[in-house]
Length: 161
Length: 161
Image (cartoon, rainbow over all chains, first blue to last red; front, side, top):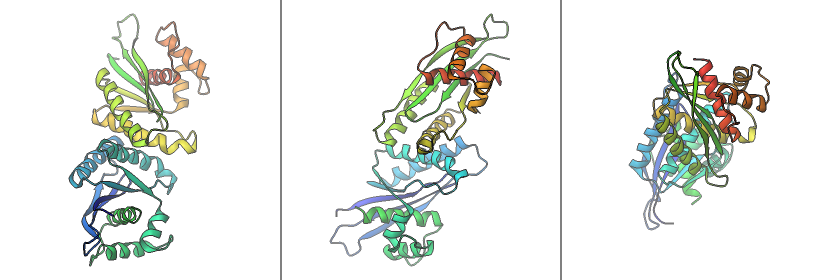
Protein backbone atom coordinates (compact mmCIF):
# COMPACT_ATOMS: atom_id res chain seq x y z
CA UNK A 1 0.00 0.00 0.00
CA UNK A 2 1.58 3.30 -1.04
CA UNK A 3 1.50 6.55 0.95
CA UNK A 4 -1.88 8.22 0.71
CA UNK A 5 -3.65 11.14 2.32
CA UNK A 6 -7.25 10.44 3.36
CA UNK A 7 -9.82 12.97 4.54
CA UNK A 8 -12.76 11.62 6.57
CA UNK A 9 -16.01 13.61 6.59
CA UNK A 10 -18.97 13.28 8.94
CA UNK A 11 -21.69 15.20 7.05
CA UNK A 12 -24.36 17.41 8.59
CA UNK A 13 -25.92 20.86 8.32
CA UNK A 14 -25.04 22.35 11.74
CA UNK A 15 -21.74 20.48 12.13
CA UNK A 16 -19.48 18.71 9.66
CA UNK A 17 -16.64 16.76 11.23
CA UNK A 18 -13.37 16.37 9.33
CA UNK A 19 -10.23 14.39 10.03
CA UNK A 20 -7.14 14.02 7.84
CA UNK A 21 -4.63 11.17 8.07
CA UNK A 22 -1.57 10.12 6.11
CA UNK A 23 -0.95 6.48 5.48
CA UNK A 24 2.80 5.98 5.64
CA UNK A 25 5.23 3.96 3.52
CA UNK A 26 5.14 0.20 4.24
CA UNK A 27 8.63 0.30 5.81
CA UNK A 28 7.57 3.06 8.25
CA UNK A 29 7.54 2.30 11.97
CA UNK A 30 3.99 3.67 12.29
CA UNK A 31 1.38 2.90 9.64
CA UNK A 32 -0.50 6.18 10.03
CA UNK A 33 0.07 9.84 10.87
CA UNK A 34 -2.67 12.10 12.19
CA UNK A 35 -2.64 15.35 10.25
CA UNK A 36 -5.54 17.33 11.67
CA UNK A 37 -9.14 17.10 12.78
CA UNK A 38 -11.90 19.58 13.52
CA UNK A 39 -15.39 20.73 12.63
CA UNK A 40 -17.10 23.13 10.26
CA UNK A 41 -20.05 24.80 11.93
CA UNK A 42 -23.10 26.71 10.69
CA UNK A 43 -25.46 28.55 12.99
CA UNK A 44 -29.07 27.46 13.55
CA UNK A 45 -31.43 30.35 12.81
CA UNK A 46 -29.30 31.58 9.91
CA UNK A 47 -30.99 31.32 6.49
CA UNK A 48 -30.36 27.90 4.89
CA UNK A 49 -28.68 29.33 1.77
CA UNK A 50 -26.14 31.21 3.91
CA UNK A 51 -25.42 28.05 5.91
CA UNK A 52 -24.83 26.12 2.67
CA UNK A 53 -22.53 28.92 1.48
CA UNK A 54 -20.50 28.61 4.72
CA UNK A 55 -20.21 24.85 4.17
CA UNK A 56 -19.11 25.41 0.56
CA UNK A 57 -16.46 27.96 1.54
CA UNK A 58 -15.12 26.26 4.66
CA UNK A 59 -15.00 22.77 3.17
CA UNK A 60 -13.27 24.15 0.08
CA UNK A 61 -10.62 25.66 2.41
CA UNK A 62 -10.20 22.32 4.21
CA UNK A 63 -9.75 20.25 1.02
CA UNK A 64 -7.44 22.85 -0.50
CA UNK A 65 -5.33 22.98 2.67
CA UNK A 66 -4.92 19.22 3.09
CA UNK A 67 -5.14 18.15 -0.57
CA UNK A 68 -6.38 14.63 0.20
CA UNK A 69 -6.10 11.93 -2.45
CA UNK A 70 -9.20 10.16 -1.17
CA UNK A 71 -12.23 11.26 0.81
CA UNK A 72 -14.20 8.85 3.00
CA UNK A 73 -17.70 9.97 3.91
CA UNK A 74 -20.57 8.50 5.88
CA UNK A 75 -23.31 7.13 3.67
CA UNK A 76 -26.62 8.93 3.92
CA UNK A 77 -28.98 7.54 6.52
CA UNK A 78 -32.53 8.41 7.52
CA UNK A 79 -31.80 9.22 11.15
CA UNK A 80 -34.62 11.60 11.86
CA UNK A 81 -37.12 12.33 9.15
CA UNK A 82 -37.64 16.00 10.06
CA UNK A 83 -33.95 16.63 9.58
CA UNK A 84 -33.41 14.47 6.52
CA UNK A 85 -34.03 17.09 3.86
CA UNK A 86 -31.79 19.68 5.53
CA UNK A 87 -28.94 17.20 5.92
CA UNK A 88 -29.39 15.94 2.34
CA UNK A 89 -29.23 19.53 1.06
CA UNK A 90 -25.97 20.06 2.97
CA UNK A 91 -24.66 16.75 1.64
CA UNK A 92 -25.34 17.96 -1.90
CA UNK A 93 -23.02 20.91 -1.28
CA UNK A 94 -20.37 18.60 0.23
CA UNK A 95 -20.46 16.34 -2.85
CA UNK A 96 -20.27 19.47 -5.03
CA UNK A 97 -17.04 20.57 -3.29
CA UNK A 98 -15.52 17.11 -3.81
CA UNK A 99 -16.40 17.21 -7.52
CA UNK A 100 -15.11 20.78 -7.92
CA UNK A 101 -11.78 19.63 -6.47
CA UNK A 102 -11.68 16.35 -8.44
CA UNK A 103 -11.63 14.29 -5.25
CA UNK A 104 -12.66 10.65 -5.44
CA UNK A 105 -14.70 9.48 -2.48
CA UNK A 106 -15.86 6.25 -0.86
CA UNK A 107 -18.96 5.88 1.31
CA UNK A 108 -19.54 3.72 4.38
CA UNK A 109 -22.61 3.05 6.49
CA UNK A 110 -22.41 3.65 10.28
CA UNK A 111 -22.41 -0.16 10.78
CA UNK A 112 -19.49 -0.57 8.36
CA UNK A 113 -17.54 2.12 10.19
CA UNK A 114 -18.16 0.53 13.62
CA UNK A 115 -17.32 -2.92 12.27
CA UNK A 116 -14.08 -1.68 10.69
CA UNK A 117 -12.88 0.40 13.63
CA UNK A 118 -14.10 -1.47 16.71
CA UNK A 119 -14.61 -4.94 15.25
CA UNK A 120 -18.37 -5.15 15.65
CA UNK A 121 -21.27 -3.34 13.95
CA UNK A 122 -23.07 -2.36 17.14
CA UNK A 123 -20.04 -0.83 18.89
CA UNK A 124 -20.77 2.16 21.14
CA UNK A 125 -19.54 5.68 20.44
CA UNK A 126 -16.98 5.22 23.25
CA UNK A 127 -15.71 1.95 21.72
CA UNK A 128 -15.20 3.70 18.39
CA UNK A 129 -13.48 6.72 19.95
CA UNK A 130 -11.08 4.53 21.97
CA UNK A 131 -10.26 2.55 18.83
CA UNK A 132 -9.58 5.76 16.90
CA UNK A 133 -7.16 6.95 19.64
CA UNK A 134 -5.44 3.52 19.74
CA UNK A 135 -5.14 3.28 15.95
CA UNK A 136 -3.59 6.76 15.74
CA UNK A 137 -1.46 6.24 18.89
CA UNK A 138 -3.06 9.25 20.62
CA UNK A 139 -3.08 9.63 24.39
CA UNK A 140 -6.36 11.54 24.21
CA UNK A 141 -9.82 11.18 22.61
CA UNK A 142 -10.23 13.65 19.73
CA UNK A 143 -13.00 16.21 20.42
CA UNK A 144 -15.67 17.12 19.56
CA UNK A 145 -17.53 13.90 18.71
CA UNK A 146 -18.07 14.88 15.08
CA UNK A 147 -14.31 15.25 14.56
CA UNK A 148 -13.65 11.86 16.23
CA UNK A 149 -16.34 10.36 13.95
CA UNK A 150 -14.64 11.89 10.91
CA UNK A 151 -11.33 10.27 11.94
CA UNK A 152 -13.15 6.94 12.35
CA UNK A 153 -14.46 7.37 8.79
CA UNK A 154 -10.97 8.25 7.48
CA UNK A 155 -9.56 5.14 9.20
CA UNK A 156 -12.34 3.04 7.65
CA UNK A 157 -11.30 4.43 4.26
CA UNK A 158 -7.71 3.38 4.99
CA UNK A 159 -8.77 -0.14 6.06
CA UNK A 160 -10.66 -0.55 2.79
CA UNK A 161 -7.86 0.70 0.51
CA UNK B 1 -46.19 47.40 -7.88
CA UNK B 2 -42.87 48.42 -9.36
CA UNK B 3 -41.05 46.73 -12.24
CA UNK B 4 -39.39 43.55 -11.10
CA UNK B 5 -37.61 40.60 -12.68
CA UNK B 6 -38.62 37.19 -11.34
CA UNK B 7 -36.96 33.86 -12.04
CA UNK B 8 -39.05 30.73 -11.46
CA UNK B 9 -37.26 27.45 -10.73
CA UNK B 10 -38.64 23.92 -10.82
CA UNK B 11 -35.95 21.97 -8.90
CA UNK B 12 -34.73 18.47 -9.69
CA UNK B 13 -31.58 16.44 -10.25
CA UNK B 14 -32.04 15.32 -13.88
CA UNK B 15 -33.94 18.42 -14.99
CA UNK B 16 -34.30 21.90 -13.52
CA UNK B 17 -36.86 24.10 -15.25
CA UNK B 18 -36.34 27.85 -15.31
CA UNK B 19 -38.48 30.72 -16.52
CA UNK B 20 -37.80 34.45 -16.30
CA UNK B 21 -40.44 37.17 -16.47
CA UNK B 22 -40.45 40.95 -16.11
CA UNK B 23 -43.31 42.61 -14.32
CA UNK B 24 -43.94 45.88 -16.14
CA UNK B 25 -44.69 49.39 -14.90
CA UNK B 26 -48.28 49.85 -13.70
CA UNK B 27 -49.10 52.11 -16.70
CA UNK B 28 -47.90 49.47 -19.16
CA UNK B 29 -50.43 47.93 -21.56
CA UNK B 30 -49.31 44.43 -20.61
CA UNK B 31 -48.55 43.57 -16.98
CA UNK B 32 -45.84 41.01 -17.79
CA UNK B 33 -43.11 40.27 -20.32
CA UNK B 34 -41.76 36.80 -20.92
CA UNK B 35 -37.97 36.95 -20.95
CA UNK B 36 -36.89 33.35 -21.42
CA UNK B 37 -37.54 29.80 -20.32
CA UNK B 38 -35.69 26.51 -20.60
CA UNK B 39 -34.16 23.62 -18.71
CA UNK B 40 -30.85 22.66 -17.13
CA UNK B 41 -30.16 18.96 -17.62
CA UNK B 42 -27.81 16.46 -16.03
CA UNK B 43 -27.29 12.96 -17.36
CA UNK B 44 -28.42 9.85 -15.49
CA UNK B 45 -25.49 7.47 -15.04
CA UNK B 46 -23.03 10.32 -14.51
CA UNK B 47 -21.49 10.43 -11.01
CA UNK B 48 -23.67 12.49 -8.62
CA UNK B 49 -20.91 15.01 -7.79
CA UNK B 50 -20.43 15.81 -11.48
CA UNK B 51 -24.18 16.28 -11.92
CA UNK B 52 -24.24 18.68 -8.95
CA UNK B 53 -21.29 20.54 -10.50
CA UNK B 54 -23.22 20.93 -13.76
CA UNK B 55 -26.21 22.30 -11.83
CA UNK B 56 -23.95 24.73 -9.95
CA UNK B 57 -22.31 25.98 -13.14
CA UNK B 58 -25.38 26.15 -15.37
CA UNK B 59 -27.65 27.73 -12.77
CA UNK B 60 -24.95 30.30 -11.97
CA UNK B 61 -24.89 31.18 -15.70
CA UNK B 62 -28.69 31.52 -15.75
CA UNK B 63 -28.91 33.81 -12.71
CA UNK B 64 -25.95 35.90 -13.90
CA UNK B 65 -27.49 36.26 -17.37
CA UNK B 66 -30.97 37.30 -16.20
CA UNK B 67 -30.04 38.99 -12.91
CA UNK B 68 -33.44 38.39 -11.29
CA UNK B 69 -34.46 40.46 -8.26
CA UNK B 70 -36.54 37.61 -6.87
CA UNK B 71 -36.48 33.85 -7.30
CA UNK B 72 -39.61 31.72 -6.87
CA UNK B 73 -39.00 28.04 -6.26
CA UNK B 74 -41.17 25.02 -5.63
CA UNK B 75 -41.18 23.97 -2.00
CA UNK B 76 -39.67 20.58 -1.31
CA UNK B 77 -42.09 17.70 -1.43
CA UNK B 78 -41.73 13.99 -0.78
CA UNK B 79 -42.89 12.81 -4.17
CA UNK B 80 -41.14 9.50 -4.37
CA UNK B 81 -39.09 8.38 -1.43
CA UNK B 82 -36.37 6.64 -3.48
CA UNK B 83 -35.65 9.89 -5.25
CA UNK B 84 -35.99 12.25 -2.28
CA UNK B 85 -32.36 12.29 -1.19
CA UNK B 86 -31.04 12.87 -4.70
CA UNK B 87 -33.45 15.74 -5.31
CA UNK B 88 -32.73 17.25 -1.88
CA UNK B 89 -28.99 17.13 -2.61
CA UNK B 90 -29.58 18.97 -5.90
CA UNK B 91 -31.82 21.47 -4.10
CA UNK B 92 -28.96 22.19 -1.67
CA UNK B 93 -26.79 23.22 -4.62
CA UNK B 94 -29.62 25.37 -6.04
CA UNK B 95 -30.02 27.20 -2.70
CA UNK B 96 -26.23 27.62 -2.59
CA UNK B 97 -26.24 29.36 -5.99
CA UNK B 98 -29.02 31.71 -4.83
CA UNK B 99 -27.03 32.58 -1.67
CA UNK B 100 -23.80 33.05 -3.63
CA UNK B 101 -25.61 35.55 -5.86
CA UNK B 102 -27.45 37.28 -2.98
CA UNK B 103 -30.83 36.37 -4.47
CA UNK B 104 -33.87 36.40 -2.18
CA UNK B 105 -36.32 33.60 -2.82
CA UNK B 106 -39.88 32.63 -2.01
CA UNK B 107 -41.21 29.06 -1.89
CA UNK B 108 -44.59 27.70 -2.90
CA UNK B 109 -46.16 24.26 -2.61
CA UNK B 110 -47.54 22.59 -5.77
CA UNK B 111 -51.07 23.25 -4.44
CA UNK B 112 -50.29 26.96 -3.94
CA UNK B 113 -48.95 27.18 -7.49
CA UNK B 114 -52.02 25.49 -9.00
CA UNK B 115 -54.35 27.62 -6.88
CA UNK B 116 -52.57 30.83 -7.90
CA UNK B 117 -52.29 30.07 -11.60
CA UNK B 118 -55.41 28.06 -12.42
CA UNK B 119 -57.67 29.07 -9.54
CA UNK B 120 -57.95 25.70 -7.85
CA UNK B 121 -55.43 23.57 -5.95
CA UNK B 122 -56.14 20.34 -7.83
CA UNK B 123 -55.81 21.81 -11.34
CA UNK B 124 -54.36 19.48 -13.99
CA UNK B 125 -50.98 20.03 -15.65
CA UNK B 126 -52.87 21.10 -18.81
CA UNK B 127 -54.95 23.64 -16.86
CA UNK B 128 -51.78 25.17 -15.43
CA UNK B 129 -50.00 25.25 -18.80
CA UNK B 130 -52.98 26.91 -20.52
CA UNK B 131 -53.15 29.50 -17.74
CA UNK B 132 -49.41 30.21 -18.10
CA UNK B 133 -49.82 30.77 -21.85
CA UNK B 134 -52.87 33.01 -21.29
CA UNK B 135 -51.20 35.05 -18.54
CA UNK B 136 -48.14 35.67 -20.70
CA UNK B 137 -50.23 36.19 -23.88
CA UNK B 138 -48.43 33.34 -25.67
CA UNK B 139 -50.01 31.55 -28.64
CA UNK B 140 -48.16 28.36 -27.67
CA UNK B 141 -47.60 26.19 -24.61
CA UNK B 142 -43.98 26.53 -23.36
CA UNK B 143 -42.05 23.25 -23.62
CA UNK B 144 -40.75 21.11 -22.04
CA UNK B 145 -43.07 20.65 -19.05
CA UNK B 146 -40.38 21.58 -16.51
CA UNK B 147 -39.90 24.97 -18.20
CA UNK B 148 -43.68 25.57 -18.24
CA UNK B 149 -43.76 24.64 -14.54
CA UNK B 150 -40.96 27.11 -13.84
CA UNK B 151 -42.95 29.87 -15.55
CA UNK B 152 -45.99 28.91 -13.45
CA UNK B 153 -43.80 29.27 -10.34
CA UNK B 154 -42.47 32.65 -11.53
CA UNK B 155 -46.07 33.82 -12.11
CA UNK B 156 -47.03 32.60 -8.63
CA UNK B 157 -44.16 34.70 -7.26
CA UNK B 158 -45.53 37.71 -9.15
CA UNK B 159 -49.07 37.16 -7.84
CA UNK B 160 -47.72 37.09 -4.28
CA UNK B 161 -45.58 40.24 -4.57
